[in-house]
Amino acid sequence: MKIDILIAEIGSTTTIVNAFDGIYGDNPVFVGYGASNTSVALGDVQIGLNSAIDDLRQKLGTQTLEYGQFLASSSAAGGLRMTAHGLVYEMTAKAGQEAALGAGANIQLTTAGKLTHEDLIEIEATNPNLILLAGGTDYGDKECALFNAKALCNANLTAPVIYCGNIQNQSAVKRMFAEAGRELYITENVYPKLDAINIEPARMIIHQAFEEHITKAPGMAQIRNLVDGAIMPTPGAVMECANLLNKLVGDLMVIDIGGATTDIHSVTAGSDEITMLQTNPEPFAKRTVEGDLGMYVNARNLAEMVGFDKLRREIGMDIEPIFDNYHPIPQTSEQLTLTHRLAYHAATMAIARHAGVLRHTYGPRGRQTHAEGKDLTAVRHIVATGGALTRLPNRNKIMEEICNINNAGAMLFPKSRQLQILEDSHYIMASLGVLAKVQPEASAKLLQKYVIGQSENMELNA
Picture 1 (cartoon, rainbow, N blue to C red):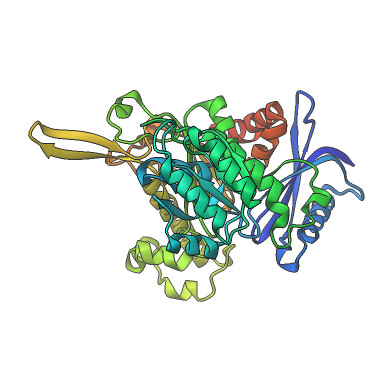
Picture 2 (cartoon, rainbow, N blue to C red):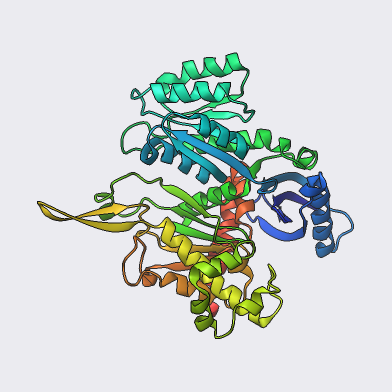
């Protein structure tokens, strides 16, 4: 059997290989998937990849499986660990952080102002894959970014640095890193002028740097033996897919509940009414990752944040005995009941952290209203992805409850009647984000067929 493209999603525990055919025609199709344990801990990611391909071959009932191209996304080996550094936290440092998060990074440290000795020690301790250096608007402050560039050159660090600060510093920064023998990427300023964010160029450079250096991560050296095309950070691939989906359906939000984190991606400019009230600019495409809201690794911590008594009342049973033998995939009806409720709370907490709010202040001119954070009021589609929201029974009920969280109107979030639910039922958004880099038209057609179209059919058959 021969197909056009295999796309692997190499996770921290599981490796999935998705197969797609008809990519170069008018009717691309999702053929199927194979899965295996990720083998980074064994020192060779190729073991898990080959095992997942074998599983796919068996599911397809074929002795041989040939493919034209192999692409991949990865969150294994710690994913993409980054630190971000700027001049003012709410401006250049935050813009740099937004660029890194949007690219799929796990932010280990963010600093503002000149790097101190303690900051450098902390950067070294985090052992980042990449370091993002911003600072100063274009033709604004030069000193801070130059100081930090020199400090990073002199530090005991090997990670490449991405410079995306004041463009007046580019030549000097390039010279510093060349003299120090350090690797440097240079791109446009993430905060070129006051109240303006420009994170897309940095996001693209981060993807490029990740692909060039992922093979240096423990256990990942053999990945190039199989993968002959793009390699992206998995959360960054989901963001790439969300951007493409935005072109098809308009303003949207993606909820991705995983075993260790809950990620929220939103692609929307917000409403004109709220824009007039905003105190700080927000990116058009924004990702937040909540490392304390995982469904397995952090399940007990999540339950404690919700409150054991509250959960006990909600599900009508004691929580502690269920946690004594809790599994990432529910094994009993009691575990399933608890997992359902934890998924709802993980999603609603993550949305509350992602979405902005209206603030009221009082002064000589009376009450003034300001908008803080990401405006989601123009969102019309919520996309469910991740294991919990694509595999749990009664997941539609969870999504319906999630859509109702702002009926009181406290958040910059739409009312439930304005929202349509889309489901990534085959769990292929990350793969389609990778595919969008090389075959955007095919990726869009697959999204139309397997996310938009199937979700519409689910509603018609409900």
